[in-house]
Image 1: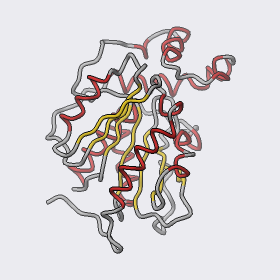
Image 2: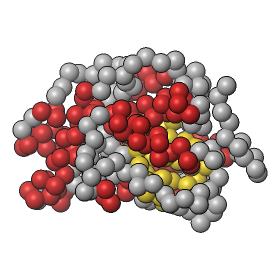
Image 3: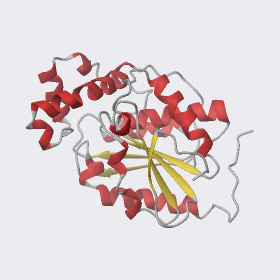
Length: 264
């Protein structure tokens, strides 16, 4: 890590080996950076995992929730900028996939830098119309019912109304972002994109994930797993074998003394 204090936007899950590449991980709606705490154990040596921590969760629980994707992207990008002293990649699941994609575009336009690879998981690309839904506007019980259809609530939350009241604000804010964001057109990214999906995720079918190929001029790959929308937990080891394989390819290109390539 650079000498300055790590931004509150991150929770760092380091390995024992020196960091040669950083993987910034963007959580799903209602999630936190801690969703990625086990990842370093299954990724290649030299990969430093940094989970993005949005306001209103974890150590930022006393901060105001954000309901604008632009504010999320600008805040995350400002925090990431000092850490671009080495190659990096982005992983995002569900809402996190949208955030990491828009953050990659923002860093390209404002910082002139490009991720080595984007991993987008459990989310259709922003240019693809999804069914018109306003889940974030539903009454609490119905809203939580829709979240549970995705298998998105832990058993302890389902059984505890007090916990439900605690998680509702962040969930609703994140669903608002996911359902109201209007993406604008920009040229495709030049970095490779790998998309992941669950074969039992009815809301994000394989044909929708395939359209992420239109978001890059680089290599595109798609891999499906047996699980539902939260296959990133149920199929975590298989997922991380794939992520690790691609990151190993990136690591093989990192010279002993590296500088971050900028876009002309």
